[in-house]
Image 1 (tube, rainbow, N blue to C red):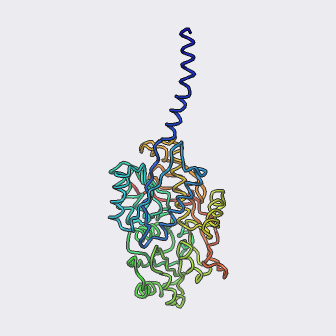
Image 2: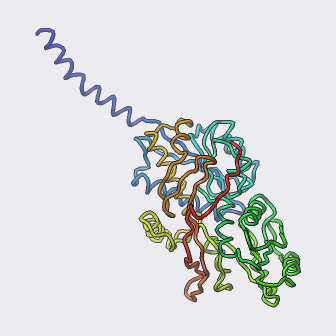
Image 3: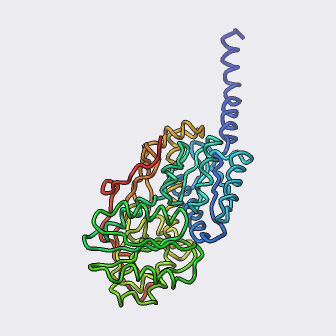
Length: 399
């Protein structure tokens, strides 16, 4: 046997071994570990659970059921922050440090989110914020490791101002006394060009008796000429719509608010014709992603997807799109480069991460409430889609 024959023979023998090694390498490719820090329990439990459901559905949809990107399996670790900033902070530290999470998603509460931002910076790993809303998250408390698929307070406020910003309108606001409420009211006031805010009422997040606050709101508005509106921004426990039981109509005062989860919108049935703006309602967006989400959610859970389910799905789809762009590489700098300016599909249609502050630019929906006796909640019928280019969302961070 000459030397060439030996080489050829060796080559034929070696081929299966090389192929086997390649297959083994693929099989043992390191998992992509993602920590989901959210309110599995606590005052925002309903929101947190929806986000988790949406995340799982989003990863399923975006990976066509494989739960893999670029040959790497996605592993989701759940962490319950209970709505407590100190708990959330320690859980994220453990996720990045002990669990070696490649990136994290969450949290539910704006107060918790503000405690998590420095942790992402310390570990130099991405935190994709969903659904915490406070402007300061992508504003003055922001750092370059923070991205957000959730809408921010400015997007909420600017879109709600569309329905209320008329000459001669006096507005009093009712909000919870923490970051979500105060940032929301500030953004709302900044967005108004014609209407005037005459009073701001902040109450503890766990308020159940709204009588005293309602009286202050009524007193601030009752003698004003023109249209008079109480604009409510509220999340979680408590039902601020109880102020309607105190009959603001006797002073010609209307109530207005943004969208919410379906159980909370049961109270909207008392306000037919009420206008506002919402982040999501399952029957509004018309696109293949939302069609799939509505169909699958109905099939699996016997109910339509809700507000935060859509947000969870958007976050998962953003992560998969970023990993596709990096071919599965989870190094933070590569992910940041891929995600800045990145557009991706969601149940709401296209979103794009703004380069300056990593806030997802997205549509909002101006609605008018319709009441159907066969539906358990007030139905937000679309008046107009408010597209990203229709909203001048301020850049509030300092890069």
